[in-house]
Structures are given as structure tokens and as C-alpha cells.
Image (cartoon, rainbow, N blue to C red):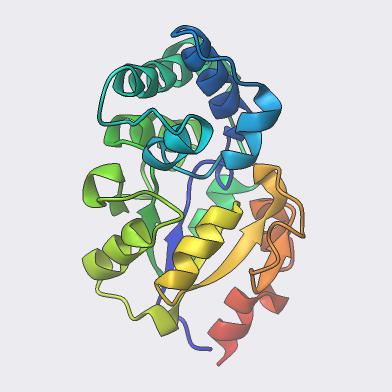
Length: 224
């Protein structure tokens, strides 16, 4: 498989943020009288709020109150209260540098807002490297809908057959699959290999992928 580009997820892939997002959702729901446990929320990380909120509480929506405020409070908690706890995944910057050095067209596809993405890129120490992005504002529906992956393909003018996505959740794999894109998964998002079974390869984190780069689908594609 010859490759022209890489669609890159951020949360869980370049930043260790999934546990923090889950805690922020629990707190935001609790602030409005909705009792949900960390264990209930954590497996849904990778979904955008538009998908997650009604999944947990069928009567709520991100479009109407109180769901709208809950979603907003979740973002504020992540960006303010929990921001000091955000850390890059091992090898995050080095992997992005490697992808760019390999002349791959790298574009970010995330369900995060532009403001959230700006923070996450800084945490991952890649804000100077990743300038082409697609966020929640570019997609009608978040993952596992394919909208954000399709938006990235369209913006970068990439053929899905000549792209891989680097990501960390089953919802990324589902979204990418619907857009015709294969996924290389990392375990840094906290999902099991069984959860990530749809990926063409699985590595511990960006550093592990970098360590095995030449034998990875990325390295194999470069050799074609």
C-alpha cells in the first residue's frame, strides 16, 4: 500500500487525556444532577459530546439545555481545572517529525473544538508541526460518524486508499472505516486490543510505533 498521507487523531494518541475527559464528563453531569460513574463514561471516550450525551441519557442533547451547558462545562473543566494533568504520549513529537520527514501529508482529525485542539497541540509539543487541522466545526456529526475523517480527506485532497489514520479508540476505527481509511492504533488511549481489533496494526504508543517504524505499515509503504 503506497501512502500519501496520515490522518492524525490527538486525544489519547498524542495526549494522555482520555481519563481526564471522562472525569470531566462525570463532574459536569453531576453539577446538573445527573449521576454517572467514571466506569460508565470511560469506554465512550473517542466519541464527541453530540454522541456521548444521548448515549448516557437518552433525554439529553448537546443542542438543548441542560445538555448544552453540560458539554460546555466538560470543555472548561478539561481546559482549566484538569489542564495541569494533561501529558503527551511517549514519542508524540518525534513520531510527527518522522511522518513529516517522510514527506507524508499529515492532517489532524479530531472531535475536539478549535480551542481544545489548540491546548492539546501545545501539550503534545507539536503546535509548530501540525498546521492543517479539521475539528468539530468541520463536521456535522462526531466520531463514530465518518464526517470528521471525510472532512480531513477533502481538505487535504487525499485518496482514502492512500492514507492511514493514527488513532486510539474503536470509534476512530469505525469512523475511518466508513470513510474507507485503514487505521494504525495505539494503546495509549486505554482501550484493549480486542476493542481495537479493526486496526491493521496496534502499538503501545507513538514511541513504540517509531521504534518499529520500518516494519510498520508506514515503513512498508515507504519501501513500496
